[in-house]
Image 1 (cartoon, one colour):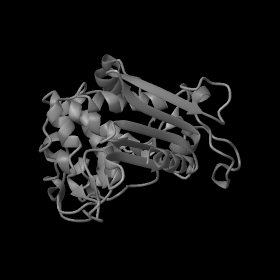
Image 2 (spheres, one colour):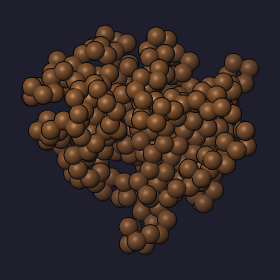
Image 3 (spheres, one colour):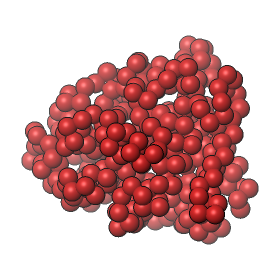
Length: 308
């Protein structure tokens, strides 16, 4: 289990990372599968392009990609970021070896699940489409744009897929029937091979360290990556997730709890790995957990009980 906790100290960021059950590496070094927290990473990259004037939040996918059919021409970047595009949840399994253009073609051929912009439907495919837009509009790979144009120039840790991955530092699964009772690496268990396919890229399965994710959030929240207006836009509760209590912003959930105040958060998992991140806005505390099976969710509940 890997637990990260970040809180500002005298204007700087103090990060503490604790780890167990992962022998042979330094405490801050293990690479973890951040699951659907990848969506926040993709949202930051998209907002970075918006901040650079490449496109706007109201740009349509018809403006940004080729081969967009009539029923999808009015889907905007905002719609994709808020899961209100009407696109299907997924076009296949995470492990499928699917190229970008084949993914986009398949997605464009699927019927919309609801009219554009009118309902919330959590769609992994929408965030993979955002990753495709990043590639087409930047002329580089999703991973290269994320790291070379955004993270590394800002002095942040790399986040990504095969270009960031180090098998020796990968968290390994528990012995389960899904892994034929072997301890598998992230590449084996989450990606299905050395490189992930486009049912996963941009929406899940990215790897980084606990510290790497915490530092990204801190820099973004502080307005060091994009303008304050875009940070505020990301933290806005744009679309009701369906219960009137939690709302989707850009790559994150916005929720209010009576005992903890406003919380920005996301979680993710694939039964073999889990991760969760929460920023308690009223207390300026950020929590991050990652581990095997559902350990991250259990650890987060324990941390929140301590905070309460």
